[in-house]
Length: 325
Image (cartoon, rainbow, N blue to C red; front, side):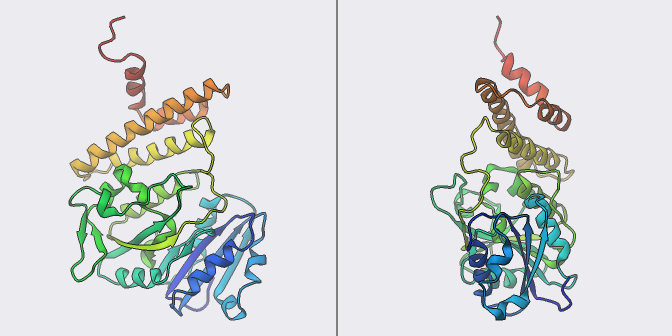
């Protein structure tokens, strides 16, 4: 743990095969122009050890980097280890994937925003090429009317009026951990759920929403998406991870729907999105049968336990209304 307080601490989980990616990510941190920043790297049993990249960085930067090495446990556990390593006095905690790099000015915009009274979470835009299927559209172009409240005196900053509603719709996918910065108090309260092998970012944002506070988005590019180890490149519907992503995403939506003061619009959007994940899970499992891979019975059992409405949904798929045969 750090003995000197840093204004901002940046956590980077690391598992890569290609050299140079981590050095590039860290260089983009120190290029932000924020002197009081420290980096925590969790080497999660990486095939290409993090220390090799760290050795290529300028000597002046190395005292501001903490390296923790552990056996491979996955990005979720690595991020939690990093969160637990941050100083109790850190004012801000930023997340960055090891194959991504920040755009100039990202951290300054985040810190200035999070100094607003009540602000707890900041995120901005990610720039990615066409090899990624995710949509990183501008929030103002895809979010429902009323979910963004522009901040007076700024050209690109808005407050999210309802974080739960933001997470309830498919538009949530424009968010990315690498452009997310938390107020220190929030970072000390939230953790990634280690049972989530995928969709851990969705669960983490939900945990942040449960803590309250104001969220802000800046429609300025904050990071460039990298092309390192990425589990979604080449993942098809018949792959286990595809079904797992639908299950874990549905699990978070079920938790959102249990929130007592959930707005009616958010409730309707969450239910609609939950049906989409049920449908995608159903067809993914059928794809597995078609390809001779078999059903994932354990995942089915967990889905039924977590989502009581799944049985009725499946009954409607097998015995659609109006079928008199």
